[in-house]
Length: 634
Image (tube, rainbow, N blue to C red; front, side):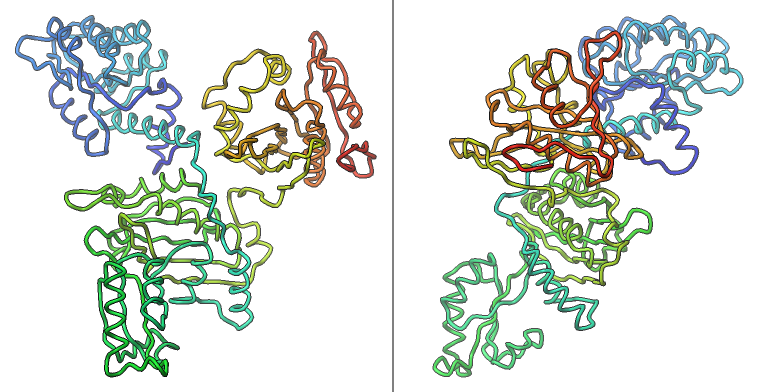
């Protein structure tokens, strides 16, 4: 929700989130009865990344009639010390009504000419009428105690100083951003990326069997390459054509040197007999340099003595050094750190942390929390870097951590990024035999790929039954759009047209520990991607005693026994988790659903004073379950 530092900030954040109304944006207008207070608030706001609202022309015109002559009609808005209380209310109404203002902060220092309590009452009344987001700071200790009591009763957050009020506003902004990020629909990983998990596991097993637990250089790069992370690993070629092909695959620019056969076995030793060429920018450059090296006095094509070593070079103009680290936290398990890389990474201290598993949206949010993210956007003659490739690299590292508990720690530093993409220059990986604790080390349960299964419908259509993923939201909107109004009424107990994004995100972004939703997906008839045919979900209570289910099949898929298969899947899954009962609520006129669950062994009873049936399936060990025709047994 919100990260705070220390008890003072903790209680201030609670005060703000409990009393303040949700923000519609991040633009703040400040009203004060003293210029110094307003300037202090603006300085604090801007130094901490906040935004000061730019008042609209109608608001400026309205302030002309409310402010003393000669005062600037700008933000912050400043009163005189003797401004009457009703003027507070008028200005607050004007600011709340401005479409360019998302929140209003009112600052007040006590004055002998004005009642602090009356000024507070005017602000409270204006907020009641306009229903905006208002924060206040009534300074003066015991002299303004009554006014602050009035704000507390009106559920308007109030603070001792302008700086504290600004901090509270920034809490609201961070909370709003966090909530938006939570329900953001992540983009899918590229369909053509499939890690070589088996090859990576064989490598790790071989190293562990040989008593190795620390991988560096080429060994670490090989393991990263299995998960699709490119590196500057050297490749060997015997002909100019081979060198060109390797260079094209690596990406330009490349460096190339000639080496003896002895040096090939230990590229890092760098035994060179045919010279070296740097920054070869094109296939023609590579071919020309290769021909020169192979025809040099030390070369001998016929005997194959001379070999070419090709490796990718960093594009220094526009290239940035970043780093990715993975370390074990005693409470949260593996933690992914991203930030500024290079030799000075720890001195610069520009880093942010996240918990795996990551998707592209979470990876992008992690990057955005670092200062180097601004450099990656491009500046001057330096083009914007390929942030999408960086997001992919972070998700690939995350996938490695999820799939391989043997990886105890990891560091890629530097990881170079430019407009073309990313590649690793150096990496170190610590491996260890997996233990029972390391198998369960993740704080967030990853996508349970092992629960995927395929089957064919009676009409021959191949269907994949798998857990739902956050990126399923767009196809889930299409799925509901193809369900009849009556089917939606039977599922949601009321008529709906389209679920809002926040509610749909709640259905697709689930905690696999407490919830499960299986979707039946199949290729579209025209071959343009996949579509959702049905979904079944359960939500389990804290003690795993009871799981509440809901199921929906697309209206045009009736008669294919897809509902039976979905129920079969969720019953088997709940049984494997040791859940004691599956329960659900079914409208009394949903005769097909009631008939199906009765044949599955559910019992039912009518909910008193309602047209709803409560159904219940006992999953106790030894309880016989009904056979499902066409799909085997439960």
